[in-house]
Length: 131
Ligand code: AMP
Image (cartoon, rainbow, N blue to C red; front, side, top):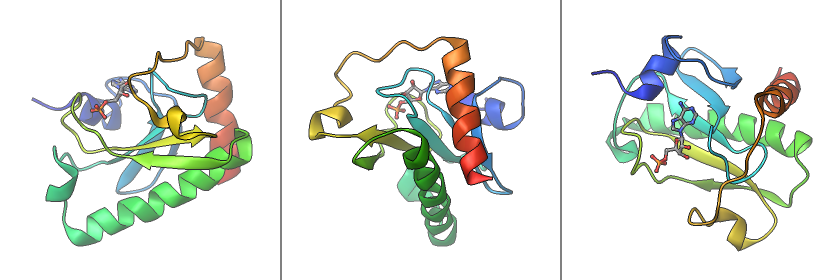
């Protein structure tokens, strides 16, 4: 069965899209640690990130870099933190999270609540920066 992220790629499930190209897609995490918390995925479904081929994995990080610059232009923060967990969704993804302290990367913290309008505003603003 296709992963939930493959169903986003196919358009079956909606997302707050940030950027995409032929191979990769970035969209807002629906249960974010911070405004602008974004997931970067390969369109081709692979569960474990370190099972992805070298070129595809390298391309994913270069794509994530472009997305991270866009997030940083929109969300005030010191850095965009990068992490991979992958315990919940079996489709490789990179988390990009605006951070000011190390605690901002703590996934055991309560998530923030955003309205659909907030998600739309943030995703459009970041998408416009990336172009
Ligand atoms: P993990 O696999 O542990 O890295 O966690 C999966 C992440 O995907 C979590 O942060 C979820 O909030 C996020 N997530 C799950 N389903 C969706 C969805 N349909 N749209 C956006 N983010 C999602």
